[in-house]
Length: 317
Image (cartoon, rainbow, N blue to C red):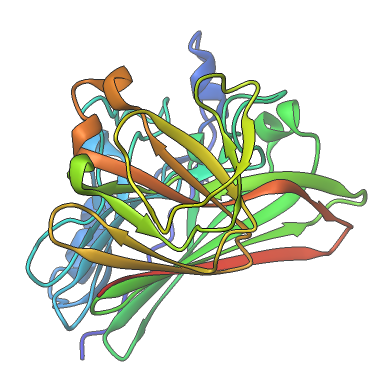
């Protein structure tokens, strides 16, 4: 069994620039080429490589042939492939990998704000460089933990000290994530959060089961004034624009992606689900993806030293 290499990069200050986005980014100055050379002989495990736009990317591979990729920018899981090489996640064609804008696709983080609000849309976590805190190889299944902490940029919008840890484990036909938020401040804070997961799909054939009976907040036609109702359908389809929040959702959903794949989405402590497809608002790509998101729409209150943890497992069935 090949050994898993955990690669740590020193953080260096960003020089002053007229571009304000540079002031809020953490760059890793470690030698990505050296990281690649340390792990190039590993048949599976964890390695860090240079991704699109020169952004550091963590590559996970199992002894069973499955693979995943996570960009440290935004801690965005951008690819999940089974042994057959089919990618079950989706990256939008308008996605940019420049370390300035969030990556559009995969599994972006919404934290400490889901949706619109007093700070930027969906908060700042998807728009910052996370660090690779730890990596392991458990009997051929790689595990990585990424970390985000407060800094002057985050405190300019949300004046609290915190630690976010994102643990990703890749299995043969599934992957699991655990997101933990710890209040490291001396005063309480509250937040909302979600994992904005984009699945590859053929939208005309997509179905989601497991939401019947949930309270639904339908944001079509007016996102600012969602229509409250109850989901009466056994199977939810996507005939047009869909943007709907389901409160108190089931901890297990079945997604048929319209491409012949059935995925089971299980969670612990993610109380809500969001379904989204922009339809013709994104003419170039809406037919090719669906978003099924685990979410915490209600505010979580944390006192100093308290932590909140939510887990999910997405499996091919």
